[in-house]
Image 1: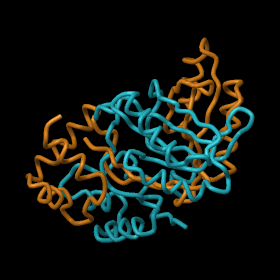
Image 2 (image 1 turned 180 degrees about the vertical axis):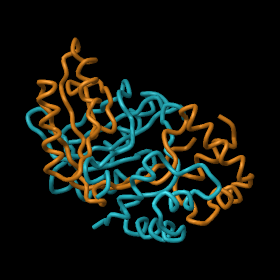
Image 3 (image 1 turned 90 degrees about the vertical axis):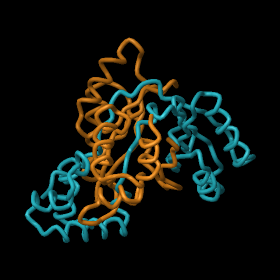
Length: 147
Length: 163
């Protein structure tokens, strides 16, 4: 990763300008040209260094419901279950983790009732118990990763 | 509560902010509203918290953070809301939540994500948290992600598709 890419990642974790030419204004803050900022963002998205650039919404504040859910998946069924879970558009992230509860996913839906029905459909589709861990309190949420 | 324009903005930025010189104008044209209304509305959503931030989301693995550990803690209910913010304020903790226990499988009520360049670094961070929570902690574990099975943006089901 080049020093420029690091500067972009460290400098643009938040606070992107709400101006008519935001890339030009952000680029000025980084001491580079608008075109270079846009091209580096595009390249880092294409190569997977960035998974996203843009607004990050809080689904709960938007009236939606979101939870972290986990399942204990038998090893010999792991791939099939992953495929079944990932097929639900309500599932945004899904991670394999080294624990008896070995599959952890984030699911979001329009409201709490719809989310509960989606989790029930995932349980039915996989034949496995789904444990739901909705957040009760958020103590901190900020990206502090140093690139 | 968000209105239909807020939801339209969420939908219009599902794939991210356009990489064009005037991205807010592009969104405005798509929604059929004035450009300054897009910027004003995004500013209001930022102030209200429905929009957390506008910026980059880096891939942890690509930044060299190979040990992404979900540290989980069984913290005394009387103390979790005092200790939670202190754990969340640690510089290496990216997310920190209180979540319900699910006994008997799951006794933990505090979740803190840590990111290390290797597992030794992540374990050292977990030790630092352990020192901070002290005797209020009845048990702990660390779950490393071994594989990303899916990673897309959050969708809000029917409501997120606009009304």
